[in-house]
Image 1 (cartoon, rainbow, N blue to C red):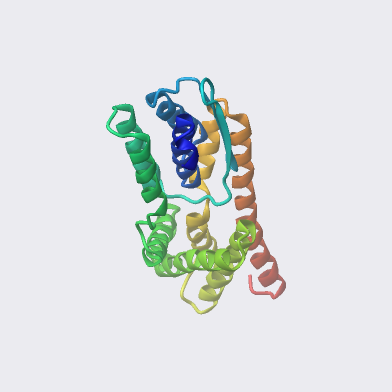
Image 2: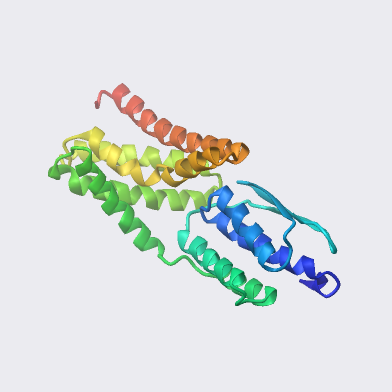
Length: 259
């Protein structure tokens, strides 16, 4: 914010970029990010603002006195819709004239630095319960409820662990699905489960990129073809990693005569 004294537009651009960055990093749709940034700029007296948002970067520019153009790169993406909601709340307060650029920037910094609302243990427990419920929803038996519960929870724990070791999403998803398939097969061998397919299907559901697919479709329908296709490709890679991991387990144990 050092240039804000000589160029007031720069301070507004910083607020817009930080709001857009938080939304994009935490699961916000591309068109919603662009709309929020434009509304904030307009509320601060910069009606001629232009933005170009992709899943990996934001370019934002304002015309007129103090013309400014800036680029922000997005390297980390996750899902935290609470932060998206908080940014929307700040945007609405800006539009109603309740906040100055400095106050908005300070509040956005607090939102960005906030820790995830749910600790890792809660996420793993939620994934475990969701996996078991998906098993029942897909027609599985109650006898497989506990195996799916354990396998699904372990799958998300593996995913978080592997992603911390190797920050490449594809490999983390591949290895976690590989271990889900292996655990499901071992539980079947130990007599703890009956239907291998249903246990695996239920357990991999927490890994399926549902939000990513939804955002890709919504971006495509809104005319943001670059973002829509990029998110679609990312969702395809995730689906491929999950399928490849499970297929590897089936191929290996079929070769061992276990299936």
